[in-house]
Image (cartoon, rainbow, N blue to C red; front, side, top):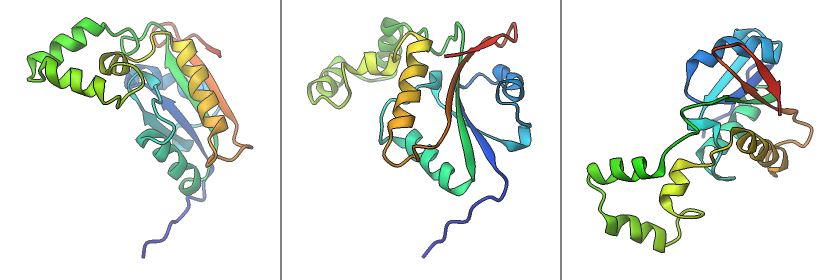
Length: 163
């Protein structure tokens, strides 16, 4: 039987994309030191499923790492968000997935829309952050008292604003 041990230090969780150039802005956005931050990465800072792996990681971190607040930070003009569906489809086919496989995945309705739209994800970072914030705040396994903040930041200029 395993036991869950909690961290004694209060932490701030940051959910963000994979571009580490944005990391230097986190202490200013959160008003916390780097040692008090826990960073979870998701391509484009997108949470696609309310009971998927990323939400699971968020929930476990909340209860095991003494997280006191959550920040979702997306990047202005991120290459992670602006994905070309035709380019994604072409790369998938180049690597061995046939049109039949893609049609089958679409037919069995594994994802919300079609598989390529699911992979490309939403194209508006502000919408992504608002949706993620609502999903986290409304999740039945996350305390209603947990503060959740959403920010859009620009790693080149150092500018950021709350969504």
